Length: 167
Image 1 (tube, rainbow, N blue to C red):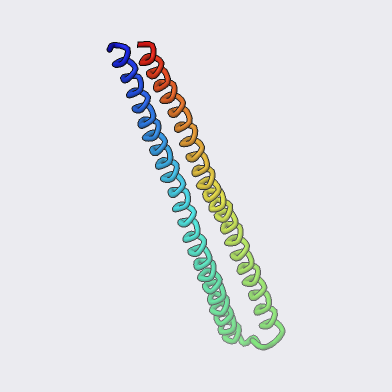
Image 2: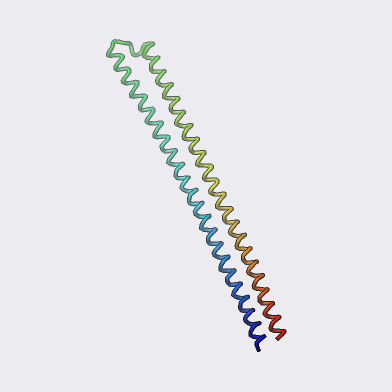
């Protein structure tokens, strides 16, 4: 009777090992999924940042263009007040020069926004890749845990069967 009880106990331990392996595997899957979703959420936040960046760029360009118009109007008024022909060569030279500065500023605003957006795009891509690899790693860890737990459980169950047979 002692061998039968010992064999049954070993078989029970094997069953518990399998249950524990499944619980650990489920926990690994949950952790990996949580980490992957966090990475995807962060990627979505970066998309929002990119939209805000584009909106801010457009506002900055608009502000610079309004500033040029105001400056040209002020220069015209100042030149006219001094008796200078605002439609003449000097007035045209000031206007062209100011418009060129504004064009360069607008291009710099666009370039800076593009660079920043590309940096964000790289981060977003990295986060999405990280999410995919986290899921794959979680699946592999889960599989390994189930295989190891299954082997331990099988070993315990087989050992219990042997003990039972010997008894």
